[in-house]
Picture (cartoon, rainbow, N blue to C red):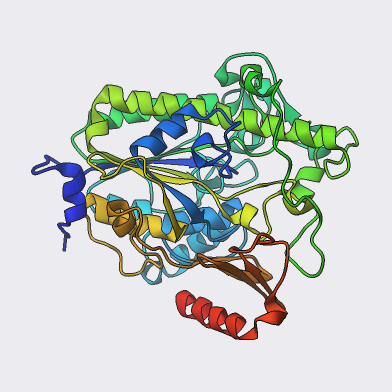
Length: 464
């Protein structure tokens, strides 16, 4: 039965002709490298404007430090497999025993009268298909989810080509032959995100004129590797001094540290950012340029939403699918269970939000987005979702959050407001105190066995 909630009234006012729309913006590999999240050297005016109009969650954590499993939790509201094929595994279960698999978030909205459309990289594969070039219509990543799945590829020929594409249609065939970063002159459309944004805006304009509420998800690829963006987005970073990399040393002892294999396989001109400060600096600047490039597209999408008038009845969610190390712990990439891999931006905005622009420091999780959107649109909340609605924090930014669980194949972690515990499959434990200056550079597990056991029990209870 449809739930009529006070949350929906916050958006809809006293009377509304139809349920609020949902606009979900997914940005790949975006750590909180934004001016509004404290990185004052970054030019991100459009995302900052969204944060100023909405609620930015400064301690949002994804449930896995990789694209595939993180997007699986976003799109299903449930814990899933830890590998990049998490959604394809779920699709196999749907094919074999459909009655045993709860609907995905877009499917749930579709069942409740929404038109659902995805553009770009929303699931792990841009366009949401499998096969050698990720364009096989018989291999759908999230079956039943979308009325339309769109991935404009242009010169990059197919979604696989666009995923790691550089300027003017360059496709990654062998990573060692593709430059780790690039800054080519030209318009936004010389890289794939320019095409994704254009198609996303086209779909937005079409959906806003229809007579049904829409759930539109637009997924931008940058700042995913390789770090390529039009040259104009490098301009803000040419003559600035970047802050030092915090705790840049490889951690001592057993951790989920890795050798940055995804990064190191590209052409780096035989340079290593861990031993070459100038190269590390260049990498960071190109990452920043990609953030500003993505921010430009967010601004264009927001302007289009306003031009349609649908902004008056739309919930907007901006979400980074995980964090990214830029040299912290001597890692260049994600895939660890450290803070840098798991913390990402989350911003939720809608008309009539109280205290707009006030951020929240509450610990929250990607799993929370599904039930939150149900509360904000007034549709039935799923009893199968593992997360919790963020409505209390949207109503009061000082409200408390909850622990956030994340996982890899070999370990799992719980982040609380004060600590992070990481439990490896072999029983080894890392414990870090986020109230202490050392934070995740000093494992204090052996000194606090009672706290370790308490947090283990909390983690087990949350996974049930």
